[in-house]
Length: 111
Image 1: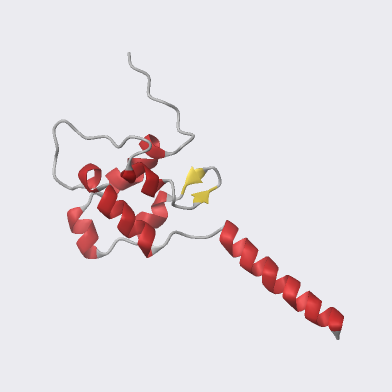
Image 2 (image 1 turned 30 degrees about the horizontal axis):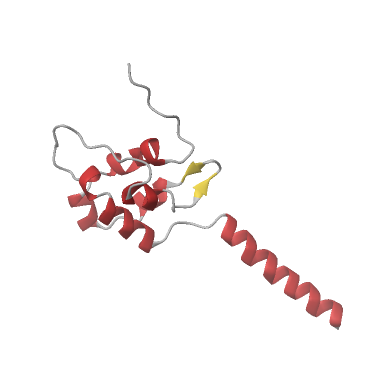
């Protein structure tokens, strides 16, 4: 009987731990990106085009999104956008955020 309880507890623990590893993004993470990255993801054309910088609130919010392999799963954020979110924000700009924010992204070099 004790072995069955231990086996069940191990199974529950394994399921919980694996869920954390492959976790998906949350509505709170989406809301944080919409709030902190507002200037970078608006639908309106902006000149000059603003770019988020690592260490600022926008990039901090982006880097909190779970990863898919070594890349930030920003598609998860786009998938959680409501119709109202989509009217105000450009999904392509959201998808581009990791190119500027991902902590291990290559630095852009000036030419």
